[in-house]
Image (cartoon, rainbow, N blue to C red; front, side):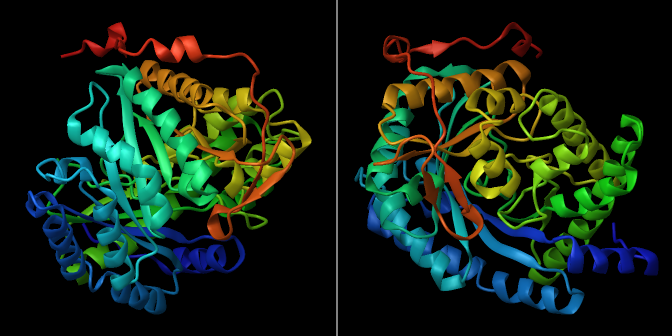
Length: 451
């Protein structure tokens, strides 16, 4: 279905772009790599490199042309690939970081910002290939610039794989000791979706086409601007305002997605209409929550305000496109949101409040810096808590934690660029070592039996 904007919508969109930080956050090309399998790991890597370079060679130039012609900023051009634990399962070598190196080289060759899919899906159990990939993550993320990794450790249908959760606590700890940027490129999921265009959790699902274009739009600044016009109005008016704004944002994403799909001759997958903040002033989800009536993000009422925002964004988006997917809602990454950073530094936003907020937002505990001496058991326990929220509520949740080696509560970690900076947040002092050591699987909830 084609879509044409009328003159009024064009003028509104130009104003949103010029004054309110509206952009297409990413055009992500998903590429199937299952046909690159090979017993020789270097031969597998060469196949991956060749296929990525051939398939994605026009991605960046086409996106740049669309930017120029339509005047719509496309901040990131990215690639997601089939989970490497599947692609590499037949390899004789366990050194999967070799494949990460080929992925990194290919991403640089075609000019994308990131490549996702150094991933494993182990919600019900760990294969030998899953274990190899997980053990390769610290070195793979440290030795590459553009590769992102994700591991799915639970789902509503399968429960929580606590053996994988334990492994990921160790992996995050080891990765942090090699440098903070590696942890910023690593996500641990429950109920991961297969068409997510946003890093670090993007991968190309096995149910997807050979190649597909997914678009992620953003626009916290646009929503914030709209809410300034309904100060003191009832919540019904607030919700309607957000819905109308999300509709306009999604229409822009649909336009870019269809145009990129047509020019690249690749199927259009989904528009992910998540409100993804940046460190820039005026591009903050926390500011939206404060405009709804909170003195500071994190105070009492924050979870309710976020629930309203998330629901209204989804409702507005699904009216604008028949292909809404990915995560679609509000992200709350602490380091990437100026308002969240301020609230955390002031003590208004704590790890417990963030956990509560993840019950109603798009993902989970995202880009949170924790003390450098945090143990692997504590990291695993935080992952388990967040996975439980996702499992019970039948929603995607995720954890992206950065142990700040050598730093303590109140100090700051700087990641640069869109990743921003984060204050080191306090954690509870009690040990979860005995809990994590049990292993096995936390069973799926009763409501998973819906076949």
